[in-house]
Amino acid sequence: MNAITGSGSIVGSGEKITAKIGSGVNKEALNGVVFSLGREGAEALRKGDYETALDRFTACCEVNEKICKKDDVNYGASLHNMATALHYLGKLEQAELYYEKAKAVFEKQAAGPFRPTQKHRIKFIEERLTLLRFGGKPSSETYIDEYGVERPTLRRDFEFDNPHVLAQRAEKQYWKGVTHAKNKIWSLAQECFEDALSLADQSREVPEERVMLCHNNLGVVLEEQGDLEGALEHLHRAQRMMLKLPGGPRGDPDRMQKLRRIEQRIDTCEAQLRDPNWRRPPPREPRPRREDSDESYPGGGRG
Image 1 (spheres, rainbow, N blue to C red):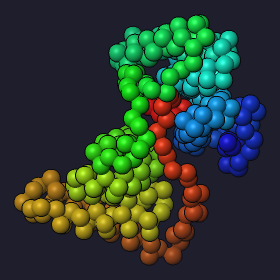
Image 2 (cartoon, rainbow, N blue to C red; image 1 turned 180 degrees about the horizontal axis):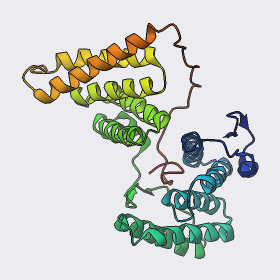
Image 3 (cartoon, rainbow, N blue to C red; image 1 turned 180 degrees about the vertical axis):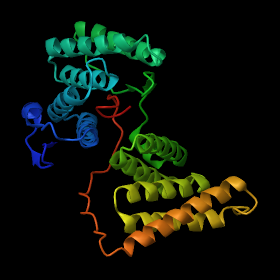
């Protein structure tokens, strides 16, 4: 996996990544690197490729060292993910070290507003440490979610075929996208809204109004990144869907307000496209399909 330097170019990977991150890189770019590293590590872990998982999680941890405080939960998450990969590889002394480091981070956060989540995470790590000290390996039957709660792992064939499960995942991705958009992390917001739309299309159980809002939000995110043509495609789609909703927008003040905002954004994008100084942004690199992992936290893979 590659990292971004101060000039925005792509270099190096793995153990050398820390020294190659330039001081001029903005935090959003590095957040994107962390997200990609974590996703690749999570996928490798799910496939049983623990060496690759360890490489990605190690790099993820080293980037987080640059952008996070030492008591940041995302840093703790990447430490935990490293420990998990080491545990699977049978490198028990190293795994124990990183489990303890992750536990220390979560203990510092245990008095904060997300205390229950950190308490759950600490308990999960303590159980892993007990298992490790008896020579046991982690189970793939459960994972720890973004709230620190241990949950059973869904069978992959059930998860990808079940419309209700797909709709739940679409809703989760939608709200993740909203959170990223509010924090102006546009690239991650775009990925989440794209995933939500893909899952909604597979499920057919996601309400039309939610799909409409997803197209609208994706249009907004694309506009913020300068992709006006892409933004217009999704804004027009949102506009058409709004007009076709049962009851329409006319009798609902909230829907009317949303429709006006969509129309205003369409006008703004079209006006910018008519500007002779406007330049089309470079195409995005294709990204691999995201799949949830069984073991990892936010900041390093699955939440």
